[in-house]
Image 1: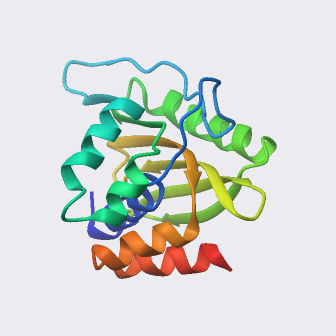
Image 2: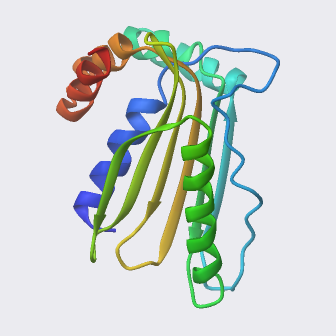
Length: 186
């Protein structure tokens, strides 16, 4: 992946993966990407599902050094990441699935906040599901690298507060994250 694609993906993940509330019922911030499977022996497949308990443990580990990050992590509900290697066998199906998910998000009241498409650099879409004006219930990142060798699907669920995003950006000295947090406040 090239630098622009990686930077966009990292900023989106950091912006979204920070603060969430726990609840027993599925959140409207959850998105079903469907089932993924390894197609060829040379393709990559990664699936990560991290729920609140493990994220709370991570909060305890960073509490002393990064209290703002720990505060956000304590209320994380779910982080789901899928990375799928693309080849001739699954490329067309994955392109259709990507478009279907985007249509589902558009029809489901999600707001697209990032759309970056550039030949050779990739295709990135970042969507948020708002709860009123004070919080984001969910964040979805869909990214396909410029060489069409890899697709990434991320869903982060919870109660993301703009001031907390900006505070984490400041604590970790990540300018794009600070700016994202500030722009979400407006």
